[in-house]
Length: 288
Image (cartoon, rainbow, N blue to C red; front, side, top):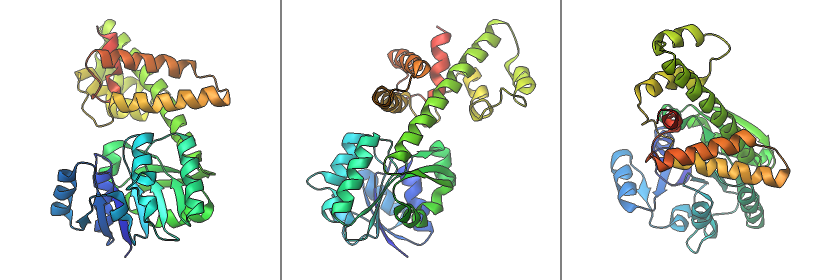
């Protein structure tokens, strides 16, 4: 049994923390809204802390799943950040999708303080977190990733060590680039079918077993055709992630014209009131 501090109990973090408790680990949780932390402890056990630093004291591992770069900086390097109180040899695992620049900075700060760091963004959404079947892409040293895997295994279906510090975040950017392109194609295909008077269910049966098949098609075609867009990963978060990818692309010279275009399409969805709808709501702008 390990002592683990878990920072962030949102739709992804809460079930991930639950899996750790169910695996027998001792958890201290922190959430910016204390009511959520108190409710989680009441349902699952463990204890809560009022600051990340307090949660991190004597922890073997500190795991973060928060919002964006500024949130990760606050819970790690801020005045009450976890790095101020982590013990030598502990591992910090960041499941937040942030910039590769921040991931590298945290790894360097960790080295100065005897802390192992792994940037470990996830894919699989809320359903993957609930089922313990997330795909995790990791950046860091081999020793750090092997150490972190002992904890991540309980909520992961796949863990891949992609490369050096920051590589996990770069892999997540590539993941989001691919998803954005697939969802735009899926939206246009469904919109075309509707305009042509095709039965969406019959069309799905016809094409979902061939080269057009994708996870998004299998899991979102029907709900998109029904106009249901309440499946976890919000447009606001997708725009944050695509912004990171576009910024990195400008820095490394990668040309990302489709990503830039779809990012603007998501801005249209936000303007239509869809900021908190899931990413498959991209089809809405074609139905105006």
